[in-house]
Length: 79
Image (cartoon, rainbow, N blue to C red; front, side, top):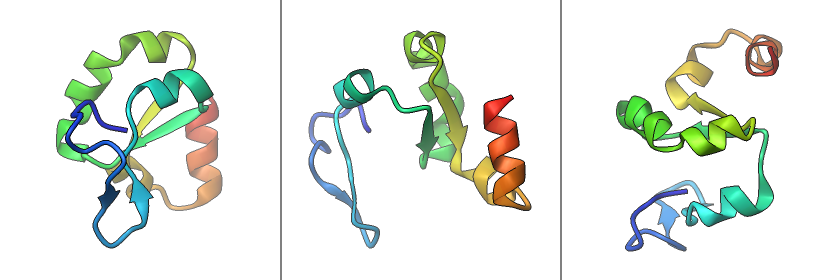
């Protein structure tokens, strides 16, 4: 998901991950959004407070990378 209209429906190189508009989060309401742009994480969280208030958790890819196990990660985002 990206706020830039120029990136919508394109793919992150080498991943096959499609970049979608923010409206997709609002429509599907996932439990967790993984932020790949870790260097803009704080700004992204600040700009998406309405989604966080809806119960959607934002997690930086760096946090995910630093978790030792999937179980630790799940415990962190569900607590």
